[in-house]
Image (tube, rainbow, N blue to C red):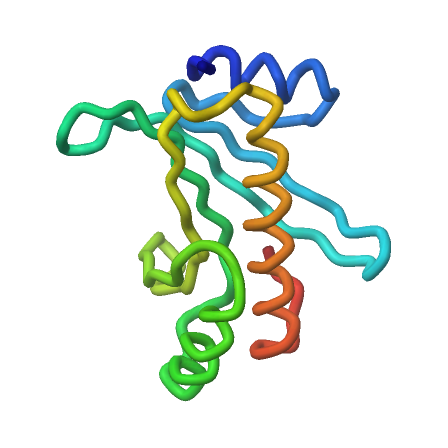
Length: 133
């Protein structure tokens, strides 16, 4: 069973640069095979029933109402769920997932992180034809 500090320690041990914001961290992945990059936020948060969770979120692209159907259809082919988020720049699509921390060994976060960012980047490239995140 991992703890939130174990997750952050794993990123440090792997020499993955990240920004530590307390209950969440931000990092990026570079996909050399495609010369593309993708950002990732991982955080710690209890579920409504108190179960400790790790959440993962990777931005896909700025909101485009003409791309909603294509994005939702394509998202059924991979990991995570598509959601709409807001920040100071407006609405944007994200790919997100949660994992009970009790089910993880710290090193297992790598699979979740690379699967989510890889799929978010695939969606970004295929549907939005961009690499902004």
